[in-house]
Image (cartoon, rainbow, N blue to C red):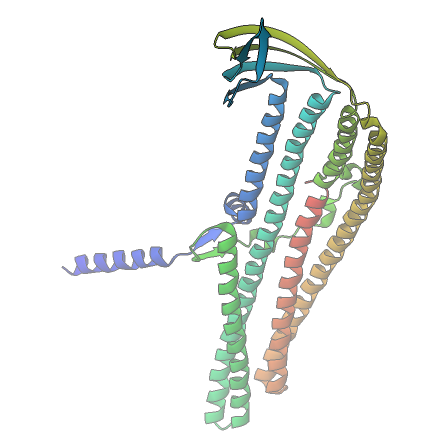
Length: 423
C-alpha cells in the first residue's frame, strides 16, 4: 500500500509538472504564425486574388462579343400606308424583331494586347506588394518577440538581485540582533527590496501585455509560453551580413515596384495612342422579324471600320500628357533608387553602431559584476559601508539591463538591414 501511494504521488507530481510546463517558441515559429494568421497578410492575399481575377477578365477581351436583342411594338395605326388605285392600305401596325450577333475585334489600336499586359503587370505588382506586407509583418512580429525576450532577461536580473537582497537582509538582520549594526542598515535593505519588488511588478505587467499583443498579432490565444533566447545569447558580427549595396538594390522589392511603375506608364501611353487609332471588327448574326404579318429570318456577315477623326483634336494633347507621366515615373524611379541606397547605408551604420554598443555593454557587465564581488567581500570584512554594496548591486542591475537592450536593438536592426538588402 505504501509503495502504491508513493507511485500515485509521483504520478501526480509529474502530471503537475506537465501542466505547468511552458512552451518555448522560437523566432521562426512566431514569424510563421504571424504570416499565416495576421489580418494584413490575409487582406494582401485577397488583394492578390482580386488582381488575378482582373488578369483573367482582361483575357476575355480576345473573345467575340455576343449579344442578343429582341423587341415588339403595337401602334394605334400602321406606321406605313400605300395607296393603290384609290385604295389605302395600312402596314406595320404591330410586329416583333429579334436577333443574335457575334462581333470579333480585328484591330483596336493594340488596346486589347496592351490591356492584357497591364492586367498581368497588375498581378505581378500585387505579388510584390504581398512581399512587402510579409516583410512588414515579419519585422513587427520580430520586434514583439525581442521585446518579450528583453523583458524575460530583465526579469532574470531582477530575480537574481532579489535573491541577493534577501540573503543580505538575513545577514543584516542577524547582525542587528547581534548588536553589530544599526536598525538603519536593516531599513536601507528593506527599502531596496521594495524598490526591486516595484520594478518586478512593472516587468510582470509589461510581459503580460507584450504576450497579449504578440498573441493577437500571431492569431493565437494561449499565453503560456516563453521565448527561446539562443540567438540572443550568441550575437554574430555585422560583417557576416555586409553586402554590396549597388547589387542589393536590384533585389529589393521596392526597386522592382519602381520598375513596374515605369513599365505600366509605358503601356498606358500605348493604350492612350490606341484610343485614337482606327478600329476594325468582323461579325456574323442571325435575325428575325415579323413586321407585316409574315415572319422572315435571315443570316448575315458584316465588317466595321471606325476612324476617330475629331478625336485627334484633343487626343494629341492627351497622348503628350501621358508621355509626361511616363517621364515622371522614370524620374521617380531614379530619385527613389538613390533614397533606397541612402537607406541601406544608414541601416548598415546603425547596425555597426549597435554592435559596438553591445560590446561596450558587455564590458560594463564584467566591470559591474567584479565591482559587486569586491564590495561584497569588503562589506563582509567591514571595510565598506552597506550603501556602497547596495550601490554596486544597482550598477550591476543597470549594466545587465543595458546589455539586454543593446542586444535586442542589434537583433532588430540586423533584420531591418537584411530586408533592406533584399534578403
